[in-house]
Amino acid sequence: MTIEYNRQAYTKVFDDLDKFRDFCRFEGKVFNEADMYKNTSDVWQQYQRFLKRGPGGRKFNRNNNGNRNNNYSGNRNNNYNSDNNNNHRRYQK
Image: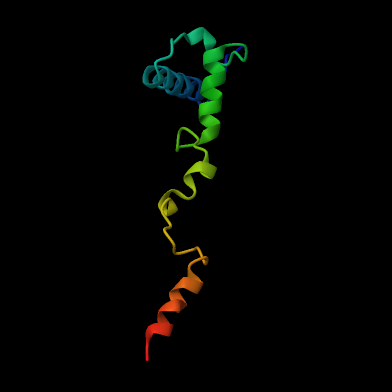
């Protein structure tokens, strides 16, 4: 009876452990190896949400930031002064 060594499984576990440790270190969470792969652990759930967000990290509300370059529009988009702009012609000859 021989025990087969599954290198991919061991590599995956230790890679996941390193990534989870880095997450805890950079986010200021308490690192505990026993929390890895435990769905009832709050830190593991936060790590899973972090992974789903992708490389960008935190999600921002794009509805608030979508018009950040157009905060000041002045009178460019308002047509209420269009009649007043044509009144200067009556003073011309």
